[in-house]
Image: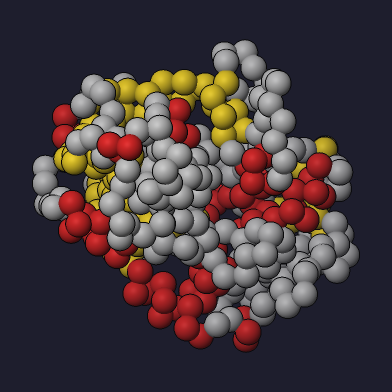
Length: 364
C-alpha cells in the first residue's frame, strides 16, 4: 500500500510525487465521492492533465482491480492502482521547490477564510488548473499552503482562465467532498456579471437549451479550439446535456450593450458564454464565442458598434457565491469587478452598487 504509518499509528498522507513504478492508493473517507479525474489532479498536480487522462483511457488506472473512466466516483476503502507517471520538462515540484511567492499571492486573492474553506478572487488570465502549456495555475499554487504531511487545500469547482471572481477552495478532502455534493445537488447559488453586445429581450428571462462539445452533424471546423467550443445540440444527440441559465438586465446603453446578471442553474462547460452567443448577444471580448474584433465593420448592425477604448478581454465575472457551509450557516461572498470591467463600467456610467435584479428571479 502507498500509505505509511506514523509513530502515533495514524496513516500518513501519500506523497504528492508521482510514482516511478505502479503504486496502490487507498481511498479514505475524506475522498469518498470524488471523481477519478479530480482525484488524480489533486494527488498529482505536477503531472500534465493530458497524460493523466490518457492512462485512464488506456485502462492503466484501476479502481479496486477494475477498469474505470474519468467520471468514476470513488468510495471509501477502495484502492486505486496508478502506473508510473511521466513528468514534462521542468515539472514535478517538491516541497523545497515551491514558489515562495505563491503563499503571498494566494493570501492577496483571499476574500474569506475560516478553518474549513478559502474563497479567492481569481484574477483575469490566471488558470485554475494546469493543461497544455500552462505552468502557473491556482491548483499548483495551493501546494504552497501544504502542511508538513503533504495535505493541501483542494479545488471545489473551476472557472475559465479569463473569467474573474469567486473561487471556492476546501482545506481538506472531506470538506471538498461535502461541498462537491452541495454543488451537485444545486444548493449553491452562483451569480455572474457580464457585458454583452446588444440588449436581450425580454429584460429578464431564462435560456434553456442542450449543449454538446465540438463539431455537430454537418459541421467541419479545424483546430483544437473548435473542438473545445460548446455548441447548441438537440435532445438525444450524443453527449448533449440540458443547460439552464436565468438572466436579468441590470443596466444598458441601448442598442449597443447591456450589463447582464446571470444565474446558471446547471453547470455545463462554458455555459454562460455559449448561451450568450446562442441568443445573439455574445459577451464582450470573448475569444471563443465572440471572435469578431471590436468595432469590426462586418458586424451586421452598425448601431451596435462598440466604442473605442473597450479592452479586448472577456467581460465575465463570477460575482457572488451563496451556499450552505458544511458545518452550519451560510457562505456568502462577493467579488469586485476586475480592472478591465471597472474601466468599461466607468465608460458607460454603470454603478457596481446598483441593486441586482437577478435576486428576484425564480429558482427555475
